[in-house]
Image (cartoon, rainbow, N blue to C red; front, top):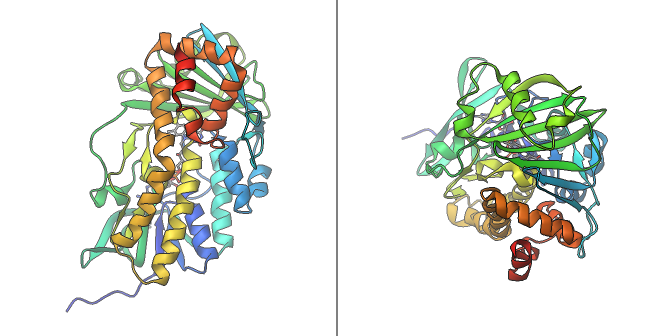
Length: 408
Ligand SMILES: Cc1cc2nc3c(=O)[nH]c(=O)nc-3n(C[C@H](O)[C@H](O)[C@H](O)COP(=O)(O)OP(=O)(O)OC[C@H]3O[C@@H](n4cnc5c(N)ncnc54)[C@H](O)[C@@H]3O)c2cc1C
């Protein structure tokens, strides 16, 4: 007869990014024995635009940790300015659209080293145990259910067992892939280059998005004259990089109409990080003994800057289902699918807005027209940034009236 290993924890969380650290904290606070595994040690960099939306900040305040996070942020962002092809510009301000409630009228420019380290510290303070430098390589199955993981730690393979495994391991996540949950069809073939830049002229307390023929670029001020600059480019263009990553980054930046003239004193602080392909989707989010949260569940494109919000929110949705499942001692997919249903209800319209934005990005003339409309009708621009800022419901911009006004 097969020996059953004693569990090392009630729940193993793979990945200690915003999704993993948040679900770990919520479960630990509910009295669950949680073990978090991450291949990195914290603080660690993560390629990201480093903008935290007002809705994400609201979630953090609701969880009682908003002040801790605000204390390590570099800047408050009052909204977003968007430029397209040197032909159109619009500005949307947080907190001014009707229906804006219970969320700060600002987002944050916040380095991921600081944000993620703070969220990890909060999880540990709540009682979650953390093993860093521990790379999960495989999922352990027993009786048609997930029963743990295998990992490499200090060059040794270890096996760890739990009643439930949470995959919070990001877009290249091992848990979803080993379970065969990942949709293999590529969606958007894009890559990103991200760097901190000092001396970029003309920074304000608004985030910036620039669309142009080479791709798009986001700028998030991080305070002290430093900005996060994140470029998203088609895969074909990335093939031209070779080893000259920093030169390629600065050259490509000059090609954006609203940025090129501001680079005279600009210099890179540290290396350019690259990541991609970006788009990714799991077909199912829950199986017997395991579920997926954050980017490990789905990631489309970073343009609207909603990834951290989705990581935090999905962690919260999952934590509620996991606490129920543990107390009923039922980790079957039938019970865990309650999370999948909640996730789809919550994010279906969010993904529809992301898709809409992608359609506009793919049609420069339409995009420029939409930006001009938004500039003519500032309340529409404020509504749009309220939706992408994760405060207003997506249906506010998915009405025929809003969409027609945007493009007609
Ligand atoms: C270019 C770009 C710009 C972006 N800009 C923004 C933005 O401005 N605002 C925003 O809200 N979102 C942005 N996003 C999205 C955001 O970065 C993600 O949605 C967010 O980080 C998701 O959090 P997560 O916890 O799910 O995953 P992650 O943050 O990716 O964390 C996953 C963790 O899992 C660990 N891990 C991975 N594999 C293993 C393994 N095998 N074993 C152990 N540990 C493992 C990693 O070390 C990592 O710590 C951007 C994304 C990109 C690519």
